[in-house]
Length: 639
Image (cartoon, rainbow, N blue to C red; front, top):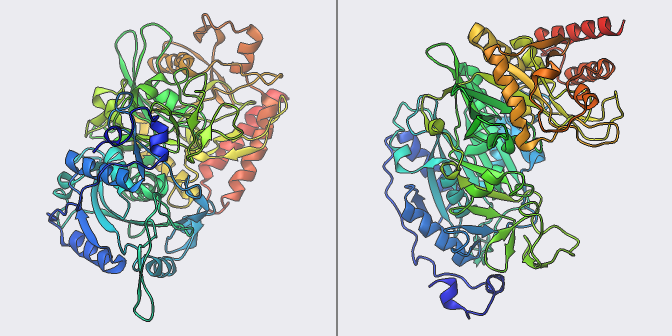
């Protein structure tokens, strides 16, 4: 029975949702028979089942019917609200608990055998100590719930660059989200033989529904729409390649294929096996001459990453297509060149700020088959968030289920509200996005939000200098005076929360990869869309106009434009950057493309302090040498 059939026709969609009118759920959960070829899988599932004591075990097959059963179940439980199919077919809204809305970095741990291997940027706990603590929490944690076994592949199933895992969870929301974000099901399980390496990923919301007291009495607790536990852990065991997550049902805390596997565990795997797991978007760029290039780019949050991943160039003849918006796995190919895949199947994007004016491609991707979390609900059964449209609707139900109007003092959507949708719905998706062999990377871009000092674009002098650029990535968190650096939030390679081992060792791995790639290594560039003038106004229009910077980068790869060599790298000659129609003055262009030597002296001092904080005994000499060279070049300019 549908919502529309069970309620008065004149009742608004949001009012029906507020009355908790739900669809009829399946009377019994379908139980599938495991087909695991590997005893290591079945033994582990049996072990976890004995520990967590679920009511039932369901081996997920990845079918459309399974998705339909899960979403109907969650609608019946109040976890999901089915959106109006006339506006958003086969799509749903979830409202999390207000205490479970984002990644909990202070509860995220790297449990390496030795603390030094986790390094100063990670929270560390001894593996045996953490497992003992977590085992006590997981004991009986799934009583009254179904335990879902989710075989998943990061990358195309069976691909040369792909990796597989098994996630156990008691959250149907996590299963449905994993089905959008990864390849799940029987096809993946069939690839795991007795010799296949796979990552065990254990998750529970930590909210059992049945408890047995010491006297043997049983208490049954009613379920809630968004179960979670106030105590949360996201623990990674790099030596055994395990992930244990307890307490949260939200995003990167619970979708363990994403940051947990694809970056923290995979970065450890990559170091040992000679490849790279990076927090990078991937795009295919086609020039007016129909030459194809592939770029990987690392940006911290709020620095235009999704906009570049789905860029629609304003300049004639150029085309940008999406391969990935968040994570890249890169490995030297048979020809010695670096090849990359997007290991994910979908997008888990921040909704606020994503709109028709800023990223229409992303909005068009969410036309249907999407799970929205913590956005607002319109009266017609569609969704809305800040930035989606220029004008807010006159009335909404906000992310916490309350009436909202434009006069309300709180935002309609949570600032970290999300959309989860399969990548193949993206209008700009490249045909090669699922190529199991990956695409050749021609250039790597690093960016940050820098109102001062850092120019619009610069080319690194060589691989080692490019690693220095990546290692010193940062965003300014306070306004800076002209010629000075504000307080910096360092985020090297945009990987600060995601490196699964010591950051200085991670820098060394990048240097080692340069040795492996040699002359085939991609060129490296630094970009900054956020430079401001003395009055605090942005100098560069950004968004789709960033295609002009991409054009200059491609022309540098082709050798068609020159660069002015400086201590910070190669800068564009003003007449060789296409700024036609932007209305930039010569002074503005000089600021965008110039070298602020005094500002860079301050930058060098800050870099020295930051490197020292990472441990001078582990810091690669090649990077401190680059810092010395930077200081020497600046001194000559200022003498």
